[in-house]
Length: 75
Length: 211
Image 1 (cartoon, rainbow over the protein chains, first blue to last red):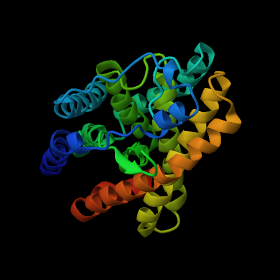
Image 2: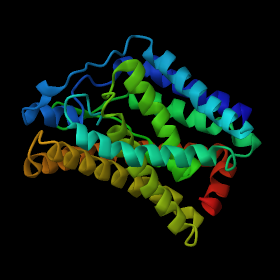
Image 3: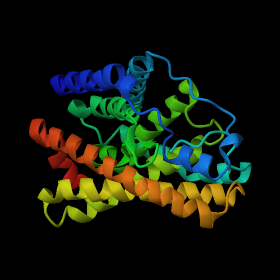
Image 4: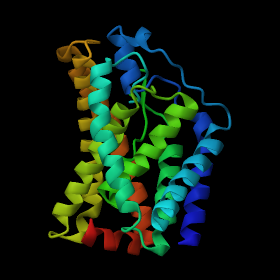
């Protein structure tokens, strides 16, 4: 499991750090429908993904997910 | 498919939060008994892959993009309730850290992109355990597509019930674009499940029996 975990985590980090900057910048399905149907302006928030979000976010959800399981197993 | 703050009425947001909280609660209950020692990191790793893969928007028709959701994959790897928990971790971090999806819409987003797909595909896995374990790739493909389509349907109903946009315009538009995005979801889910089957089939074998 350790080996699988490390390889899968490394793969996720490659996706998040190296591939994500090249992802499509077009609006996604819901955003596109919101633009086409005139309710996009109602959105009150803009996403704040920076250059390293693929690194920090991926590690954060890994830590949170693993942490929750470890805490629950002790309960 | 992340709903930002401002799209949903308070009533609809609250009603959506109820099943989301319940499903996450079920996931938390299962976290201490379903995962044996060796599978402890699986939830975190699945969350990490889903988070990273969700960043990879791929172009679909006409200046629109789509991205992976991951609920189907999570349900195949972890079972329905732990998949709900996994998706809540991902969608929660997206909303709270990266403002991707609204805070008030968090319950709706967990429901649409997590719970619905996780329970649907978890149900398909359960039904298939009596059929044939080799059907897992077919379930991955069909389940992933259906998870996206059902999530898009739920999103359309929530927007319409909130008075944001009429159902008869938003539902066909959401289903039209997400029929293509769902195909992408199916391809990624099948690829990921194939990779796990090739390297760690034991992670899936037991799941087929106990899902």
